[in-house]
Image (cartoon, rainbow, N blue to C red):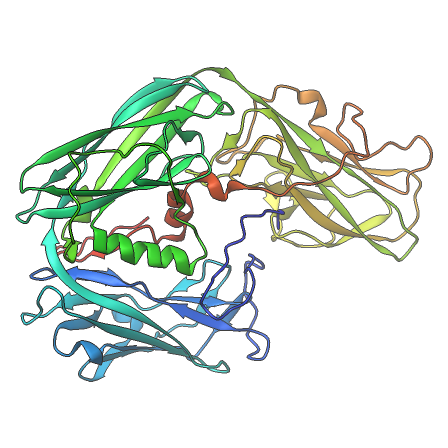
Length: 522
């Protein structure tokens, strides 16, 4: 794996530590070695609505294939206020008694990485007898062959139906470091008064806060959410002006994108509980004046749920003007050992700036790298982000050992000064003085992403040197940089926006069931 401090901790789920991605094909589980944990969102649904579709998520302490899975939903504490029904026939669900739904999927369940795997999707719907203020527990219990049973209890609440609506796309032109403003608009498109609302932001890393409002929360220079107490009457529209600034490290010319999503106060509580379960902070309040949609009115808010989340979104499209490029420098290594010894070579690249590369919205690699294995050595342990090159446009399996050249993928965002690296374990079969392989970045690829406008192409190649003698060279870049430069390389891209992280997980919002059975897919 690329070394990175963006570790996703699953606080409160009973599994210690960070789960890191590993093999693309999970191995069969051994119960003493693998711990499971399950999580289910809190859910607020509106009376007289079709309800919401949600699904529990199962986590494991390492990649695994799970067989004999049973998911049990127990909502007896809600009496006759809600019903749960399977959304997909393949989940093989049945109701053995009132207030209980059990699902036994036909196929094994794979858990690949720290994001876990969605289990049986269920439609949580109010009954005719449900009233605003009704609430109760939903206990999800998961059992599987060879594993201890795990459970999680979430809350289901019944609220009044409202319809929050955003506005259309805003377009802006700005240079790196420049400030600009955008409208923050809310319209009550429903038939009930809206009692407060929360705007949740999903912005690219380049979009920084221009001002820090007291009713908004921030992580570093990025706005997370803004909370409003205003009561918005049926058919009424409100608008505020939000101040932004492009980061000085924004790549130019280029584009940056942002979104914000309206939630009711109750639904934001559900959402923030989810964030807390993932160890993700919603940020700290700003120290400036309040951002107003209208004169603030403090009041006790009732439970409300949005009946149409499809229109909750507003988008921001920024054309980044000017010129602000970057230099990616290959980072090699110098290792030594005797015949038969296994030695770790840490190689990668460094972003020398002045611009950050952010391909996070597309999820593609910022650059592609090849690593040539020196003569007299064999790669016996290979990173999962690297595949062997076996011929023109022909590659082997991820992490496959024994090849002479590897093609490696990088992260979708690399900040200025960061140095993503990978570890190759090389077995020294024969001592060859000054055996040299090449580490190359910005290599061509007929795929998404990649970087081909480097400010300093001369340092795109570095040496991977084994058993150097005297003038053999070092681990620095191809232009003779100091080989003693440390490989520090931990990223800090969790600041790149709650939305980016959560949308990637497929959990940025709740799904409202409609008669046409539409479904929000992040």
